[in-house]
Image (cartoon, rainbow, N blue to C red; front, top):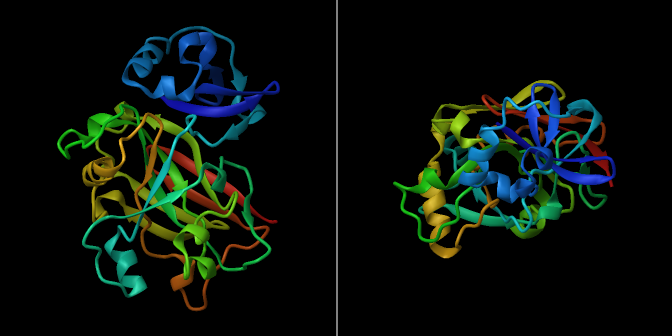
Amino acid sequence: MKLVRYWHDNAARTGLVRDDQVVDVATLAPALESLGAALTVDGRGVLANTLGASVAAVPLAAVTLLPPLAAGARLFCIGLNYKTHVEETGRDLPAQPSVFIRTAESVVGANASMIRPAVSEHFDFEGELAVVIGTPGHRITEAASLTHVGGYTCFNDGSLRDFQKFSVTAGKNFDASGAIGPWIVTADEIPDPTRLVLTTRLNGTEVQKSGTDMLIYPLPRLISYISQFAALRVGDVIATGTPAGVGARRTPPLWMRPGDVIEVDISGIGVLRNPIAAA
């Protein structure tokens, strides 16, 4: 199943995507009106039983997709988690996962503009696989980690490199500088998240490509590690890091500019597409 947050008829809604249409979850199961409720094991079970139900739907093209973030969701991001990316930065392999936080305001949904702020031109892309928590947990074991996953989505960890040089928090948290979506594909549809292919394209040209089996710290390790210091909640997002090919490590550097279009394409999930606009 594909779960979305979308805007239609002057209201934000949680939806279930069916082909090229979206169904308001509230018409299928009123108790699952929130994305957080739909992401739980019980919520996903209820929705799976409604897949054949005949209900009103609207064309996906007629709605505005919002970031698929549950209320209160936190965005945990992992730096330097592909060996090829570590090598292009010239750094040593991290001894532990490198974790930082992004605010919900720093990301937009699919098709919305990622904003290059007026104070920087060093606007870089980072295509990533993101995990969305469906079952809460604290001090989760690696063996049990994947049972806590509600689904997967695409993530663009848009970065202002000149600000990041001095502060990761600043470089990663300009409003609307990143993106997430277009939807959350539920975990049952991705039985092995190590077999996905991630591709990033800038204006149609491939700039990043890697299998998710190339992560230095795989998903069970990341989920377990973060849960040692933060009790994970339903809807929390873990963006798992980016492979080689970022613009900052090219000669000359390749920055995203107003008018560009950036896409993060992950097999089995979909394409997160965003135009770039100036502040």
